[in-house]
Image (cartoon, rainbow, N blue to C red; front, side):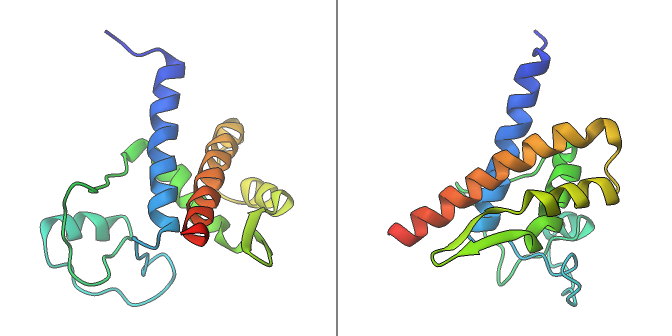
Length: 140
């Protein structure tokens, strides 16, 4: 049975929300994306991550919390990473993204005009997930 378009969208959105939570927890090191020197990959999995510009800090141990980003989410996740300079920050930390800056990034970046609304909605879901994760960390 084929998934409807809305079911496929919800699945992609859910995976990106997981990615934002993973990123907000600090469980992902993005050395190449941030312009830092990258260590030589030590395993097949690390090689795959390195191809996407992702690197593991320390040793790689996969377990129950293993996370894989789907290829169809790469564009949205990379856009999300570009937005990390657009956070509005209050006394308790980030309170939301500066949507004027986000709009500039959407228009000036490599996002096709027909994909901008979809990417923006996915970015908002990731923003909420990251804010929720940071709030949980502050309250624990």
